[in-house]
Length: 314
Figure 1 (cartoon, helix red, strand yellow):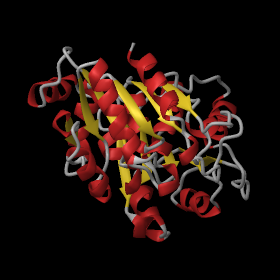
Figure 2: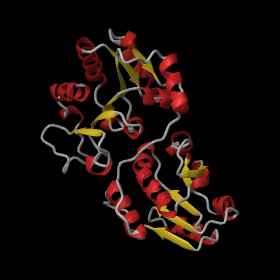
Figure 3: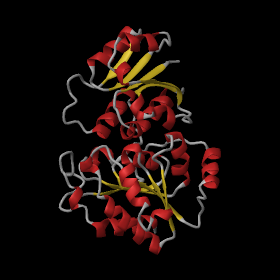
């Protein structure tokens, strides 16, 4: 029976979340859990720690991922038979080859430019395994931790528990924080709501503005929590509303009904993979023509976001 290594070069939580369905497909095909090699930035150990399709996760820090012999040393002793490399990197292919892995599957070399992240991964996996896969990603979580989060943070069915993705990887992907405050206030008037502010230490200025507003008493921030502390709270919630960010991809993977605002990234690459994700594009743009450099954060209609949020909750 093959021992398989999956190599993920991508840097973000969202990229990892999109690839989960591919990881599961490989594991099911070989009827065995597999090993993941990924960058620390993907937070794979935190997100995938309860996944039954994964035997081990090897994380590399920023310095290690740029190395060569250090990576070989980490994986050679594990005696893998096959690797699936979700990248067109010749360096990663050579690392796998020099680590003694006989069968190495990878994207076509020098083919990265202009690729659709979701579709490229799906087509690669389907071609190599000769199967059709369900692109819906699922993040497994421990129910005991979820129930503990409900108790510790008073998450009950009496309120609408909404994870709010106010952060983003860059300013062009971030809807104005005043819009979110206005949205939270209007939603809370219609539904008794609790809002979990999904952001990190870099988002403290935004979070402080929300917490000092009239809706602040209904909010809890993730900014000083470890990801492993925040995930059970997300799992205990019902909805995600926010920017296209890693928090949203975690939420949709955990099964939350989600509303993503795509302002400067392509929903065809980062949104359509999950039936849990509902998509809003800038006014005048569609799912097909919203992409990197759309720069549409000021063209997201507040009324449309409010309407879609109410539809999501109803």
